Amino acid sequence: MEDLQEALREGGLTVSALPGKGRSLFTAKDFYPGEVIIRQEPYVFVPNNSASERRCEGCFSSSNLKKCSACRVVWYCGCSCQKSQWKVHQLECRALARLDEDKRKAVTPTIRLMLKLYIRRKLQDEKITAADNYRLVEALVAHMSDIDEKQLVLYAQMANLVNLILQWPEINIKEIAENFSKFSCNAHTICDSELRPLGTGLYPVISIINHSCLPNAVLVFEGTAAVVRTVQHISGGSEVSISYIETARSTMTRLKALKEQYFFTCSCPRCDRVGQPADIQESAVLEGYRCKDDNCTGFLLNDSDDRGFRCQQCGLLREKEELKEITNEIRTMSEKAVAATSSAKLEEAISIYKMIEKLQGELYHPYSIFLLQTREKLLKMLMEVEDWKEALAYCRITIPIYERIYPTIHPLLGLQYYTCGKLEWLLGDSDVALKSLGKAVDILRVTHGTSTPFMKELMMRLEEARAEASYKIRPIDE
Ligand SMILES: [Zn+2]
Ligand SMILES: [Zn+2]
Ligand SMILES: [Zn+2]
Ligand SMILES: [Zn+2]
Image 1: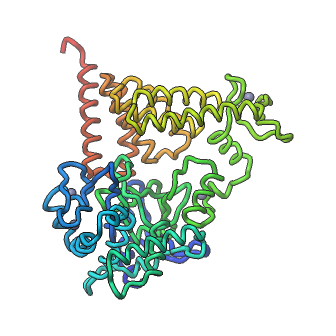
Image 2 (image 1 turned 30 degrees about the vertical axis):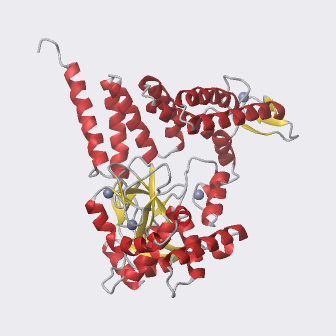
Image 3 (image 1 turned 45 degrees about the vertical axis):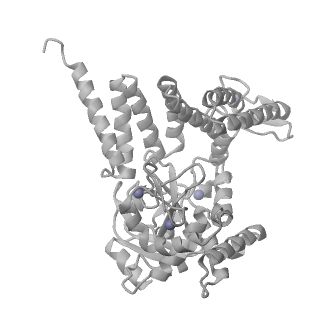
């Protein structure tokens, strides 16, 4: 790891082992909001292609795709992407082309990521750089002893498939299974600037960065490159942290998710408060019920005699039976909504989700994360059917909730302001759009930088809104 340390030192970073956390990334100088801490190309990556979604192997574009005629598994948008991937795909292609149709269907993105990992290792030559070396993959944690029997069997089956495809005599099946386990806790979902998932990549140096539910940095992607940016001032000698999970959940939910997927108990400042009065209240607001009295905003806790949940502000009780009834009704409707969505009946899905929203409004606290998720779904669907006015109404009611659950600099909050601004602009309200777009730029320039096409478009929209707003206030006789 000496050469990695040296490469990191140049960027003002260092790796140290922390008790209970293992390798961790530290700063050796101050980093300021918006500054890039580290940028890394993936060691290997694949698009998340499925029967319904296809993307280019090199750039994730979904237009003008052509299938590789030899293996008929991989897609390209053009010659330059095909060329850029050829060194690795050449060997993969030959192996895939041997498979019969049934086996070829079993080649999921995760299997392909593994094929590419082994091919990449085979092709590794002497002139490798410190950050682009299979030894970094070897150093990743696999957590084999934490995995349950069922998962181990699955990894073994997947390893057998990889072995069958590659047919390399020297390959170690046990090691492949272990690498699948490494993928599950180390691989990153590659997203576009609006945080929509596109693919999966392995970034061994980025994997050194530990999790916090209150992180000082954020991971975004520029194409396939992983970029970690500072979201708050980090002084030299501090640990760099990003979030591995959705942080807008109760402490118990976050701890459970981190334990299940990443096998550790988070001890960040937010998780350290677990069980304290402020944390109990926060959890009850995010994932708990609302008061029976419509005008009361108190949070509810399980009653001592277990009859139901009692409002901590006004003392009113909600009986278990009543809550159960609404919950069941929501469950039935959710099934219908999912069915309508999957059969592309958008209008029907929208009307069912509106009924769910109403029921959740009766059940959960107004700042509930479940209510927010339903409104998010409605916002997306309303945008799809181009009902801008209603979409804007939904976007606006989610913003105060975003502001409450996320820190001031958070990509999701910035993106929500952006959506709001775009809708306001579309509906001709340039003054209001100017404010929303301005807020979006303030946040996203820190989390996303300013050089990507996505950010350039946002800043251009802001300029347009500014120009139109100033045109409007100019006196008539001028
Ligand atoms: Zn491409
Ligand atoms: Zn091919
Ligand atoms: Zn935490
Ligand atoms: Zn109350």
